[in-house]
Image 1 (spheres, helix red, strand yellow):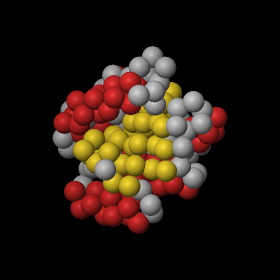
Image 2 (cartoon, rainbow, N blue to C red; image 1 turned 60 degrees about the vertical axis):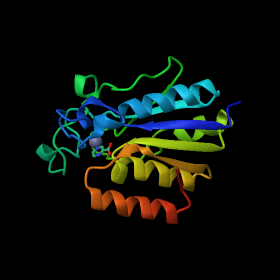
Image 3 (cartoon, rainbow, N blue to C red; image 1 turned 90 degrees about the vertical axis):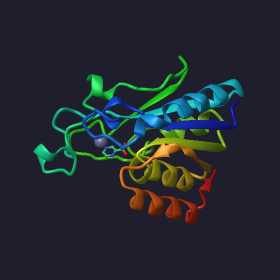
Image 4 (tube, rainbow, N blue to C red; image 1 turned 180 degrees about the vertical axis):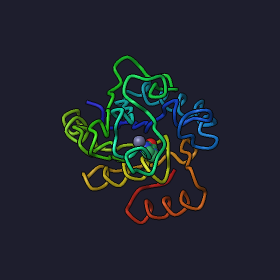
Length: 178
Ligand code: VGL
Ligand code: ZN
């Protein structure tokens, strides 16, 4: 049973430069994230990849009165992963219903059950965006009782100030920043 899981958050085309909702320099962490995926896989950790997986008419889109441009629509190129995942990676799709937003990979998914079932105790989080989906996923992981580590050289935020605040908040919540 793997005691550890790597959670790769939303490393999808639309969050990269040139995408619909780009995280500045989001592509710069791709090699690092790929390296972590390889290393964690090698030591027998469970690899989890969350993805934003919105319906065409999602509540978070500007057209529906939400804050974001249309992004990561189910089945589109923009929703594709930009990192190399092993075949047995656990894919967690979130915010899949029109009227529900979910920044956290635990929200409205069975991620907590899967981790518990597999015997995971410690989770390592990386990906984008630091102050949105990475933050929410790490905070929820703490709430679910996991030991949580943030791989700070493999995350990227949208806004540097908000990213800094998020890291401070995570540290206060008990997340260990590596
Ligand atoms: C995200 C904004 C909207 C994220 C997802 O992955 O951080 N941000 N949807
Ligand atoms: Zn989204």
